[in-house]
Length: 266
Image (cartoon, rainbow, N blue to C red; front, top):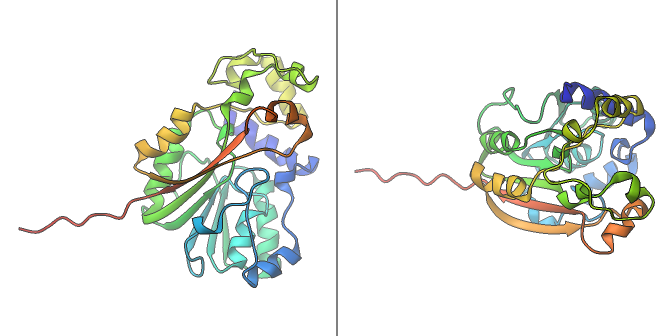
């Protein structure tokens, strides 16, 4: 199965189904951001700390796999020059509609988060990457590309799903039972039958892939980043309450691309 094509279509369907990550921010939130009053989410419920952000006015910001009219419009209203990159045309429409309505410094680009070849090296000051890399089978290319397109001193903010949630049987989970079933890393493409994958598509549900913490956090370090911030979060979703009694189900990281050290002349 072509995972990218499946998930592109699925997220287009999620717009029709009213997924919370497809609902744009309000006109009032845009107006408040223009006054300097704004917050964004990388994970479901805990806002990103203000100290994680560089000065935004005039900054080049890439919202990576971040369509839906949420993070990008607020950052643009706060003064940044924003590019939203996403695989879903319908998600990008959400961003464009707000950008046009409010005349925001904004562009949208459709593509695969693992390949940012449309952007030159050192193009951005900040990358905002909310929980989304569970929708691609491999993530080290995401970190390498993010590092390449950031300027020295640039920042990468990422939302990450705790892989532990994929250990448990989904049907039992819905009944409020934690029944360990899957080994990690988990893959819908590997563990679901072809019929189950097709059913996901008909339901408008994307395929998901857990990634180890070594890939998520160690992968950023391998790409050349230095970790500078970390927090945990919970979904605030009653459907996950049973697991969240025991552990956080999301994390977020702030990673820095080090400044280049000039070589001394002889």
